[in-house]
Length: 101
Image (cartoon, rainbow, N blue to C red; front, side, top):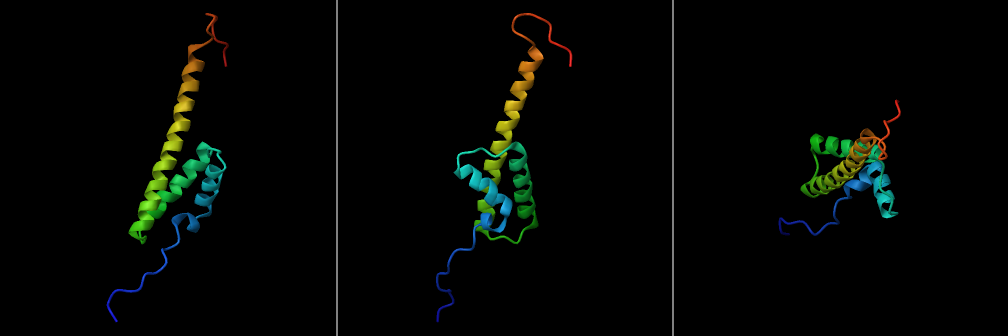
C-alpha cells in the first residue's frame, strides 16, 4: 500500500457545525437579509471559532469567507443607520425648526 490514503469524503462544512450559521444561511437562501444583530452574533461566533484553532485549512477558509460576508452585512446596516441619523439631524426640508425629542 502507498502512504497516501484513498480519497475520503470532504469534512463537514463549518455551517453544519453551528446552528447560528445555518440559520442566517437559510434566511439568505430565502432572500431575506439577516438583521444586524443576527449577522453580528454569527460573526462573533465565526471569529471565536477561527481564534480557537484546530480547524482544517478548508474549514478556516470557509469560515473566513463567511465572516467577510457577515461583516459586509453589518456594514450595510450601519451605513443605513448613519444615513437615517444624518437625515434626522438635518431637520425638516421646509425650513421649520426640528421638533425637540
